[in-house]
Amino acid sequence: QVQLVESGGGLVQAGGSLTLACAASGRTVSNYAMGWFRQAPGKEREFVAAISWSGGSDNYADSVKGRFTISRDVAKNTGYLHLNSLKPEDTAVYYCAARFSISSYYYTNNNDYNYWGQGTQVTVSS
Image (cartoon, rainbow, N blue to C red; front, side):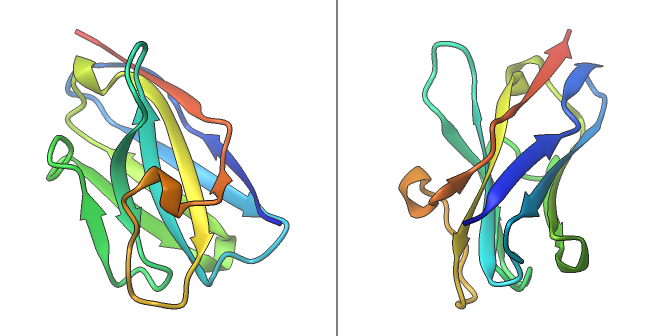
């Protein structure tokens, strides 16, 4: 069993930056692919970014490409999402997710993941 805990959310002005962290416990996640999703009020949860277990492959939603960067530190059992050039429309609860994987693939669908964090709120003011 894997437990995920996000941190790093907060209130930031448009154009600002944040770094979200996703700390894993219960089992090493070195063989786990990770992803980030977000859910704004009244909207469905949407894919943001994903990274393979090795970190060699990643993928981003078009809305964040060039502004957000996903990374992971296997030694620290932690994944990260670096948010730059934030916009008010990035306001949402951000969730990290993980799934066991030994391939070089990343996963972009909600249903691909079986471990989820509780979420961290990101609010971008205009």
